[in-house]
Every structure is written in C-alpha cells, then in structure tokens.
Amino acid sequence: MRKFLVVLDDSRECLNAMRFAALRAAHTGGGVQILSIIPPEEFQHWMGVADLMRAEARERIEAHFEVFAQWMRDKQGVDPELIIREGDPVAEILAQVKEDPAVGILVLGAGTDKSGPGPLVTAMTRSSGSLPIPITIVPGDMSKERLESIT
Image 1 (cartoon, rainbow, N blue to C red):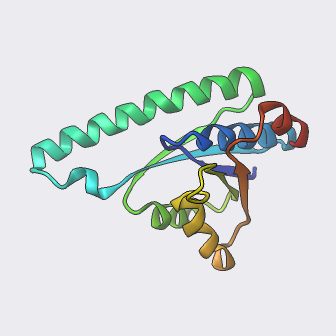
Image 2 (tube, rainbow, N blue to C red):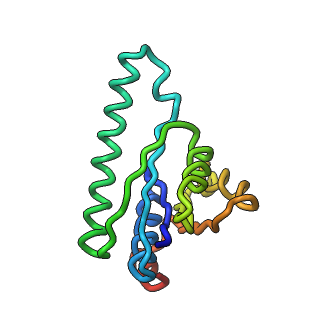
Image 3 (cartoon, rainbow, N blue to C red):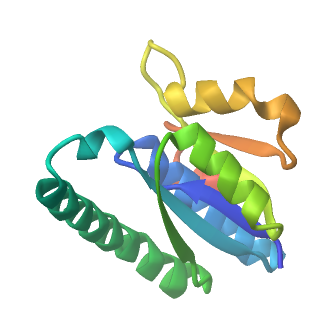
C-alpha cells in the first residue's frame, strides 16, 4: 500500500496538509504516515532535564496526533501511523523516506505569510531533484471545500 507521508508540526498549514493526505489516501486506497520531528536544540540541557523534556514533547505530539487520527478514522476511514524522530527536520524526512519503501508521496503545507512558504517547504524543494518520491505542496490558505473538490 502506498503511504502519504505528512509532517505534523505546530504550523497552521499543517492542517491542510493533513486533510489533503487523508483525503487522497481515502480516495486511492492508500495509507497515511504522520511524521513528527523533535529538533535537537530542545534538549541542550542536563541529562535529567533533557529526558523530561523529551517525554513531554512526545506526549504533546501524541495528543496532537490523536486529534488528527480520530478525524481520519471517523471521516475518511484511514488509520494513520505515527512516527516520531529526533534531529534535523530535513535529514529526518529524508531518512524516513529511505527507510520505508511504502512511502510514495511527501505532503507539505505551505505557509501564507510574506516571508515565503516556510523553512521546511523551502528546504525540501531544494532537495526535490534528488528525492526518490514526489512532493505535494498544499497551500495553507486553501479552503476545506476546495481541498475536498480536488482530492
């Protein structure tokens, strides 16, 4: 089964990327893999503090994931998989794509502010020529109705 890999973060545009991935997976018989990345700079403290911060970050990610997962299960009939990695976001996305051959498309949400689509979209498009899969970039301000009509 082909999987749509979508990145879960705290950005607003993440919501549209999640919707797109779930809708496409439901319409094509695919799956959704949700990747959340904990940046290494969050743990530049003493070992005990770093472990506590890591556990809190994982709990926050799992709670956030569960909201999206419940919607995907209830509304789209898709049961997503959660992957949590630690490190540089671009490196971790590339590693996940290479480690799971079922991942067929990377879905990213583009920011809507004047500074550009966001650091992740910018970095991944720079790497797009060497990626083994295509990238779908979903506009952050696209309406839910428009998303549904194109998927």
